[in-house]
Image (cartoon, rainbow, N blue to C red):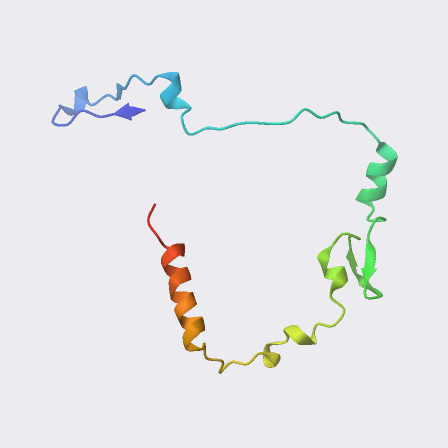
Length: 110
């Protein structure tokens, strides 16, 4: 870390090195990992690169998804259309009280 001297002449304005110990330098750095064994499978890699593992979403060949994709469980999207929501909904007194308590907990300073 470079620090500059205050009030020194411009010719003397060279950075002053601050002594930094290794523990200070890496105090905010956390690195961890897990051991694993990698297996090279060119045939399987090519299969995935070509997108052959993807399936059509709702029969539409233009939208291909992975079989584990959560969108595969969305068959009827009309529930999520913008016009289907009640925009004039008001919280009850009890719901407003609970929301206030939750906000107090949510934004507490640590």
